[in-house]
Amino acid sequence: MKQDNHKLNAIIGRKAEIALLQGLLASNESELVSVIGRRRVGKTFLVESVYAEHIAFGITGIQHASAREQLENFASALHIISKSQLPIQIPRSWLEAFRLLIMYLEQTVSTKKKVVFLDEIPWLASHRSGFLNAFGFFWNSWAVKNNIVVVICGSAASWMIQKVVHNKGGLYNRITQRIQLQPFTLSDAELFLHSRDINLNRYQVTDLYMAIGGIPHYLKAVRKGDSVAQNIDNICFTPGGILHDEFDQLYAALFDHSENHIEIVRALASKSSGLSRGEIAQTTKIPNGGGLTKTIEELQYSGFITEYAPFGKLKRETVYRLSDEYSLFYLKFIASMRKEGSGIWKSFQQTAAFRAWSGYAFEGICLKHLPQIKNALGIAGIFTTSSSFYHKGADGMDGCQIDLVIDRDDRVINLCEIKWAASEFIITKAYAAELRKKISLFKYYTNTKKQVFFTFISTYGLLENEHSRGLVDKVLTLNDLFRT
Image 1 (cartoon, helix red, strand yellow):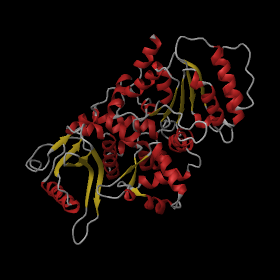
Image 2 (image 1 turned 30 degrees about the vertical axis):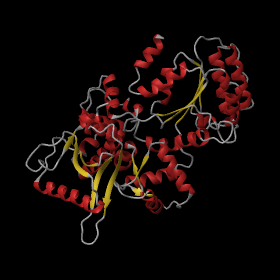
Image 3 (image 1 turned 90 degrees about the horizontal axis):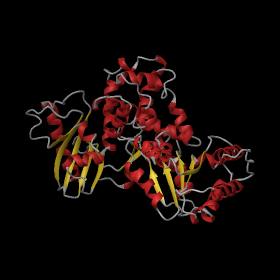
Image 4 (image 1 turned 180 degrees about the horizontal axis):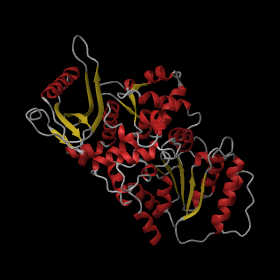
């Protein structure tokens, strides 16, 4: 188990996922587990690290390959793992391929529970290949009876859910465990960088996170000894940087006919408050029908956009926000500035466009770290709903917008103001008046009878003064967002 321990020690975070996968080895039944997550989030690394000495067979699908090429890939993988001295003949079908796999697994002797790992299964199951029917045969006729773990993995989250998790055929209701692997939190990103001897402070880690998100593969490109601005220049704006032209490859790898997906992402990048379904259709010119529904769901499943119900609004009035940090950063800056070459980002950080983006990006990060915010407020055990609030005003009354509203079951509402700042934020007399007015308008428009607390979330908190006293009930800082 030394190799197992070494690999497990290399994993940052993922404690719940590791425990679940290890638990499957102790099960007395066969297990079929789906691992879903966006491209380069670390799915393969997680599975191979936890199951290092248990994988009896593994194969990774080839993007855009034909059924014949995928079967040739299968034969090669079986030849290597079986240590056969002669090449294995390419199966004529996936049904024949899985019969060969059954023969091989029955011949292998091991004291450990066997694992079969099928990676990038959406690519293996090419159009009209018969893969899913054959895989259903493999599971139902053999695997389910032989106390093994079968792991299926895919970056195309929507395909995985529609074709496998919600399969209506031989795989119906066969998934025994599901893992939805998320990008790193701020805390995990910090640990990951520290593990690579990159010691950035929390302001710098968050600054980096706002541009490239919590994707491990992206964070691997960060160079020791360089500032965040230098790293962003190297990664995003320098020809050859891994995120210089990642955007188009990212969506094309996940979705067939990705043009509509990109159009929706572009539309959401242009509207910080988000767009309703109708507004998405109007902006993108995509017909407001089943095709739009499917595309929106695929983007949601893959973690690029998030649906929010504004406070006090009906379900049909929900809005969608772009929640993928890299996509937002690419559309705001990389696409238009990458021709300028390296060094451009360091010179751009005093502009109004930078300030607008950083405010929106930090707000998005706070929305992703709601568990940490609730914990800092001491309400981790209280049921809450979280939303934004917007009212455009009426009858001579001003409009009102709240970044984050936490509606609690203990008859309290936290109104959260979110600010990205390079030092302790100072509330001026004018800004204090604006905030008091915002609180009053919220109470007026919602007619709430709950206690309203005003919470201020900023990088370094507030510099307390006469204007903040009596106005702000709770102050949260980056340290609160980094808590596990």
